[in-house]
Image 1 (cartoon, rainbow, N blue to C red):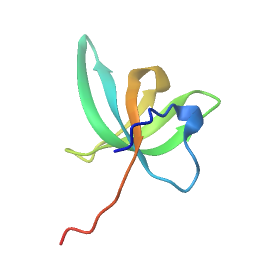
Image 2: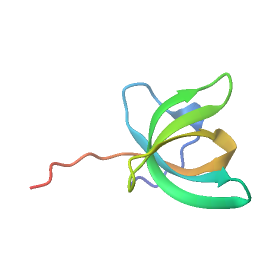
Image 3: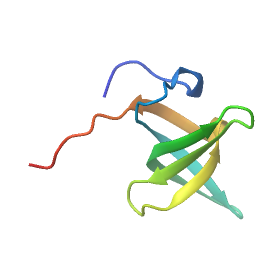
Image 4: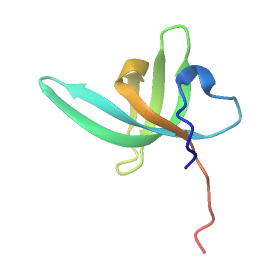
Length: 76
């Protein structure tokens, strides 16, 4: 991971990014980690794939933090 903290406005097309994010379901909140699949700059929403469950969530930008570039590696 790099030492630079990214914001959604820093994200470049063609690169992969991941972040920690918060989902709210009723009164419960859960913190997750996932790969950013798409982002909507107009509505400030991101579609994020949770790395554990592989579920896809649509999350407000304000509910995301620790955005960083993904370094993909082959599992040798």
